[in-house]
Length: 79
Image (cartoon, rainbow, N blue to C red; front, side, top):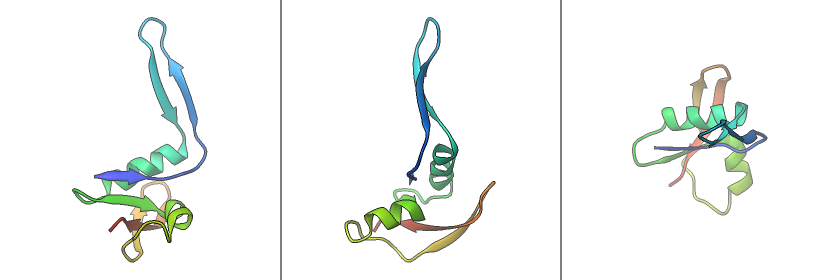
């Protein structure tokens, strides 16, 4: 399963002796929700991604799902 969203986020390196690069923010959390509510072997995207890539990528019909902390969201699967 792969979940994709697009939008603003915060990224940075954290740690004192062992450094880790990480990203944070609502955009990241929603992408994680796309992954967790997706289907094995498929790519699940938000409406933001769909609107930016329609015509370039073939998608399934819209699927509305309940996303924790966000309510109902329009989502799509890459065909």
